[in-house]
Structures are given as structure tokens and as C-alpha cells.
Image 1: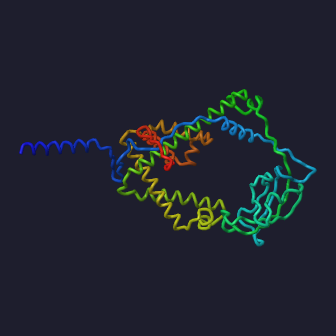
Image 2: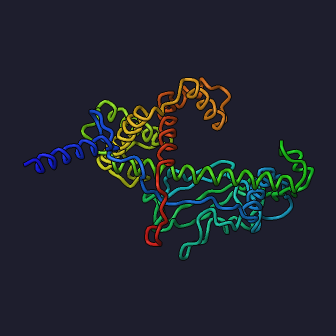
Image 3: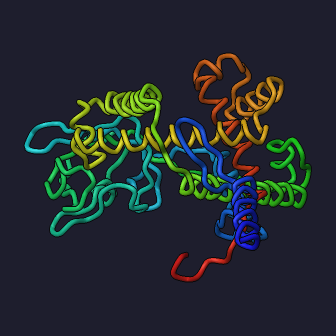
Length: 357
């Protein structure tokens, strides 16, 4: 009898001990079952290649390109042309089919290519001179993203405003002195670019790991209930964003969804509601973990990080930046980053198999 009593006592103590060691966190809305030793894909920083440096420098040089007008001859492949155009299908103008002062490199394939018996847009400009006004006919591919014009012939009235040669500057010490605040020579500039690319690569790896850690935590988080007011607010933010996009395209909301999102209003509402619930779940999980592990930044830390975000966004006016983005959203982003950093530090990075990659 005594042995049985001791066994029961030991069993009870073990149960209490295990409960005390549980890493689960819980409140009225959610339970985080696990947040330590979460498995995330292993990522390593890679060295920046010479070709990446050269490519980046080429892009920088392109921003300093100059246009030299060409006169006395017709346009040919390789020329940059300035054109106005108006497109019609069966005599009716269509969305996105008109522009004024559009820049186009002939032969680049940027505009509609040849389709069956129809010549391409760019090749029909070749041979025309500045000041010419002319019509061309092209055909949109059957798989064109805008179903309203897909697989249909279209007429374009074109005015060729000018022909230009684009001159890209050479990379010289003089160009570097003029365009860099840190470097004075070509070699110094190459190292500056390499360092910048390396920092960007490291930030990308860091961001990817943090996102993976947050998703891993959410996979281990159970929802008891979600505050409907928060879900409704997130849903409304998403809907408002897409309605503004529709207005920008000059389309009704339903037409915008069907054309660019390939969705009905009902499908959008379902996806937006699920997205809102996921966002609220993530906010609740981050708030709970931050509270339990004392991760929330101080007011001075919040202000400092918001200033950094404003600077990264190219804004000198922090208050205007807060108003434009929303201070509440900025604070949530900062808290989420602090939580993500904590999670990555506690995570286990595992090698991915070929199938997982």
C-alpha cells in the first residue's frame, strides 16, 4: 500500500513539474503552444559576385543617360522614339490603349510582338520620320492579361514626335566624384557598391528568416476566438486599398477584380476576410509573446525606429510620415520585428531537401 501511495505521489509531482515547464502561452483569444526551437529553413549569406556589382553599376549609369535627338532620317531598330498613340478596337478606345510622350526602344519587344499575319507594334514604326502621323494594326495574344482585348485586332493611330540616341556615360573617376558621396575613384566605387549589395543581401536573409519564424509560430498558435472589431477593421483596410486601386485604373470595383484579380466580389470578400483573420491572429500572438517576454520597445525606441522607417522611405517629416502610414500600423510593424528577432534567436535552422526547395 505504501509503495502504491509513493507511486501516486511521484506521478502527481511529475505532472505538476511538466505543467510548470510548459512553454505554452495563452490569453482569452489565443494559445501559443510553441515558440522556442521552432524549425525554419536554413539560410546563409552569400558573397556578392563581380557580375552583380557590374550589373548594379550599369543600372546606376543608366540613370545618368542623356538623349541626343536624331534628325534627317527615318527610325530604325535600336532607336529610342517618343510617340503619342491612341488604340481602338472596332472603333472604340479601350483602357490602357492610349499615351502621350511614351518612350520606346524599337526592337526591344516592349510593346506587342507580331501575332500570326499581324506585324508587331515596334516594327511598324521603323521607317517613319519625326512628325509622321500614321495608323498600324496589331493583334493582342489570346492569353493577354486583359481579357477584354485578348485575341482581338486593334488599330493604333501614332504620332512620331522624335527619334533619339540614348548616350550612357562611361564609368570614370570624374563620374564617381559627381555621383557618390563616399567614393572618389572607380575602384572605391566598386567596393562601395559591393558593400551595399552585401548589406542588402544580409538584410534579405534576415527578413526571410524572421518571416519564416513568425509563420512557424502562427502554425503553433490556436485561436479560441478573434475580436471581431479588429477583424472588421483589417478587412476594411484591405477593401479600401483595392477600391482605391480600382479608382486609379478608372474602373468599377467589380470590373477591376474580374480584370486584374481574376476574382468575383464574393471570392475577394472571402480571401480578404481570411487575410484579415490571419493578420489579427499574428498581431495577437506578437502582443502576447512580447508581453510575456518583455519584448515591447520603450517609447523612445518606438520613436527612434519610426524615424528610421521615415528616413528609409525618403521622408524628412516624421510626423507627416506617421500620418500617411498610420502610427498604429508602424508600432505593430516594430513590435512584430522585435518578436521575430526573438523567435529567430530561439529557432532551429534546418537544411532543406531538394523536394522542399
